[in-house]
Length: 339
Image 1 (cartoon, rainbow, N blue to C red):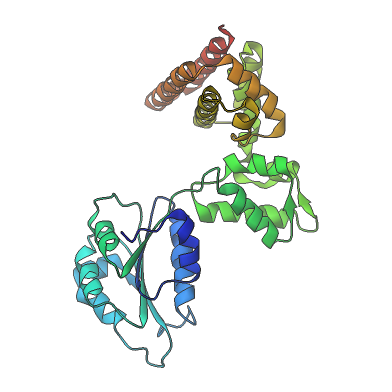
Image 2: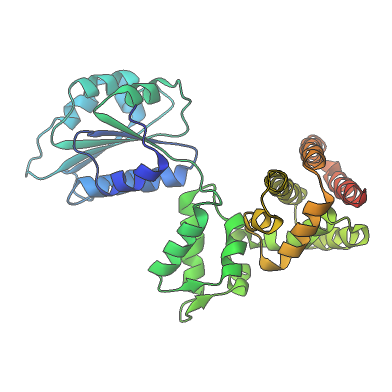
């Protein structure tokens, strides 16, 4: 198997193994796929803008003429130097062309294949994972474990530090696409130019999804069993133009985080440590701790099912989305009040 572990990928991208000239970069995070593919190319050629050093090929062309990939990979650069081929995969099967390439692996050329999500039994992925002269780099969306590192790295690059509460607020607003996350962080750094530290108010003012911060009070009220507060915050959110889908997403995510924390507590972890793993703004920590005392893992599982059902119903009956969401939040609040 040549599929690299998450901890091995950054080192490989920084210094690609010459014994593995063919690299498949794939995954659900299109931004991370593109970032790593470009980093590999930059590490493999002297000038990425030199057409004699870097050849870009589309998957459709390769699928139609498989020999083209081998020919390009084994072409000697006109003016010498290092060479690379950057392949953008398509819906057509590239495995036959790549199989031929692996049988005649280039010595002086790096071939980077950029693809989307691939099933484990996808021909291209299976072929590259079984080849000794290929490396496979899976790219999945950033999670709550590595997002803080990404945030700190971008802030450090901009000569900034970030307040703990600002970092905690940023984590649930990022992820899904690495390039989009970097773009938001760079925009935040630009906004904070001239300051030494990024604060929570900077995040609320700049980050695209910072409207999610406004949902915190509504979600906390629901899981805290505060019925009047739910009504007030729901009206406030709707008047602000917050979509029913955004509210449901926030509710589902919070239920999932609480469920994970509740299981950790049931296994012996302290409530403080379990809530700390939820990456909440410090003002929400007491509310989350109270919710953990009020909710069992089984009841949170039921709540997650109810939220999923409400999400489906709101999509099937878009005209009724608002009352569906309101009814769900009130049901969650009533469940939180039960002994």
